[in-house]
Image 1 (cartoon, rainbow, N blue to C red):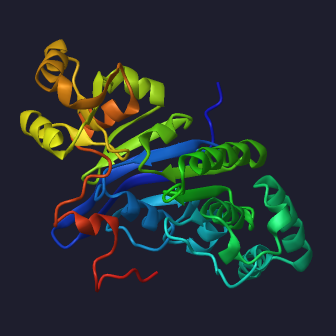
Image 2 (tube, rainbow, N blue to C red; image 1 turned 90 degrees about the vertical axis):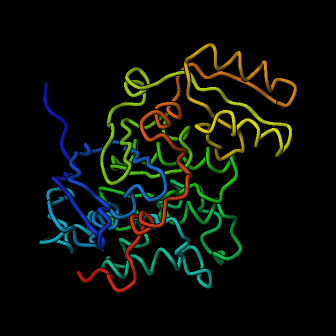
Length: 327
């Protein structure tokens, strides 16, 4: 059986900010045409790794290649193979959809004919052909994200990094965006690398990498991760803040999910009995997940994906003042 081609190769990448080790000997490969998710709590090192892949930050040790091009020695070639959808909005809202895409094409020295052809193809792909002449500031948040995805593909990038692409979107827009990503991956044979704070979103991904404290804790398919690390997760919604405080005092290992539920990773039937026996009348809802990626994440990291990092870890997610990248 032929081994799949490698789109991204990461070999022993390390990065330190002062006394904080943001990335600690990180190594893995991402296959061509793969939808690959990187999960980790705030401060885990995800953004540091992405900045290195985007050629915006130099690692202290190790190397990385994108489509065979070294991120340090061939940064211009890497950028031509790479599209990026940043977490923060980056479109010029004073320009139209078409003008934003056209400007991007000019930056990459695309001919006028190719720019027009690519714009038509991509706006059709993300179903925005009918708004190409509208000012970006008049679009919904979900539509703006779709424009950013189209822009990332304008220069025929082979790898697209999406840093929390669904942040700030409603549930319907989030689901629709993932449909577009799957369609793009299928029709254009693009490798997609996604970070997200919504664990349930990565179920369709081919593989998931869980990272914390700068180290890779696990990397496999969603089903394989659940088989290896998954355990029962108890989900409950307290009636009020007093009930929540009492539950957290009794079970301090419980964490709050993005939708406001308390989640407790435990396969012990006695825990369920205790919760219902002591707090049953103080709950709005109670359910049990037999095995989920969220329970895998909790077991491996011991904290929720949205946990705030401690003071020493905050530099993991960005470059400290005075240490801006010089590439």
